[in-house]
Image (cartoon, rainbow, N blue to C red):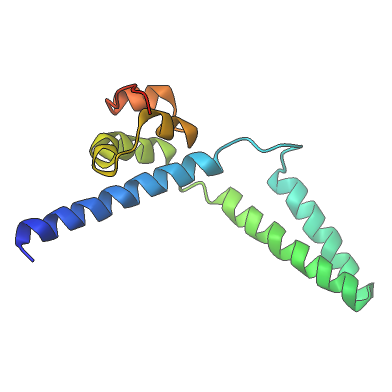
Length: 130
């Protein structure tokens, strides 16, 4: 394998990683249906679960433990706003056109997965049929 081929593979992997991280970030930032939970409401529910655990039957305990784990994960993710969407977007704009051309990804495909029109314009991805 030539050095140029190795560099092309590395570039492709890096671009794929950037695209994936951006798409995951915009997906996780989408508004969800229903009332939005706050860290305070999650902590309040965790407290209720902790109070109930010692006095419930085994099957109820199983369900409460599962709910507690999900709430703790949600709380950790809510507090993990280390994800800088602006930085991910900037990186995406830098690589999206090259990645899309190489993989045959159309404007409409980008739009279908949630990439906004302004981001596609900044990435210089042309609006084409497909």
